[in-house]
Image 1: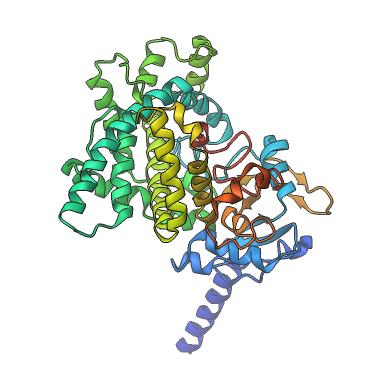
Image 2: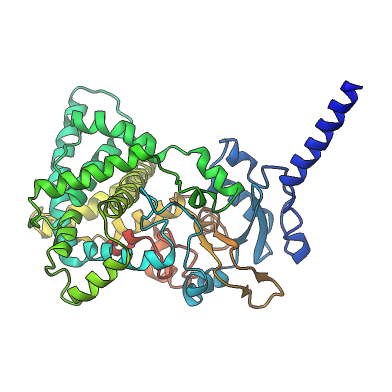
Length: 455
């Protein structure tokens, strides 16, 4: 009898668990939205949950299965989400009707690193954007070019030393060291050489904490908003403390006075001292905006963390992919070297902010790298009901919509022979014929990646 009771309990428990992890799976079907059949617990992202594929690769598989649909209903574990395939709809969501989709839909605790520019909800994002944007004015970028050049000289010497001893080195790790030294100089005003022991020892652990995927991300897919409810985030306290201390140490090293380096910490000190940031921005307006975001050391650290993550890992990956493509396409490499030599000869070998616009082929190579190897998909959350034009589909408030940049940039409809590395795709005459949302590596609309400002 005990065995029978136990069996019944297990069956009932199993049914309850099954119901719990499939309870949302009629959502898109009931709204006549096409989409793949979800699996219990995993939804449509099993390979991603099991760490067998990147999220972008999973979304691309789904995107390719529905070539004639504007939208596809999917389940990220148990959470219904809408995959956008139609580029006109992408433009409407991200640009024209942005006010209906101004959040990324990642609810994190406002403590620690949760209140950062990337994840922040719209009411906090706007003042934070006003805080960080002045870092990318033309005058600031000119100063940054000088900082990057200094690190570049050190990096070139480091590469020469490697070639002299004929030691094989993995290029991605070298690119990471270079971009990290640049980021630390531009954000914190710190001089860390590309082969510094401090860089290797201190940052290796921080890298793991910053870029290793955690189960907190999976939990947020199962139960959206749970991290904020329990005052948690993707990032642990150790990582937050590191950046808070780094910000405080950087401010103390400057004695609370902005330097002429014009890095991110200088910008913060200018605000605190109510100095001038932009000729076109009144300081009282800036201070009012920043006050609304409660500019504590923790909030400053969260923005520094965002700039670090956005500028370090993404830049290193793009550099590594570009160098790889140049290595296997020597004719492209030769053409690029010819342009570099020609432009530098006109400027006596000096690399300045001014000459960047003259490196037109370099721009094509860079864009083609971002097309073939995009960094992130775009995610937005509806803050009100939204009817999709030309359909009977209504996006409910709170629904996550996804723009799969990898899938779009590898769609033959927009980029013939997408696996081929061809910088000429970005010649003006070809670009003018392409939909503006076919290539959006930095996102599009008001909430595009702030790195686009340096483009």
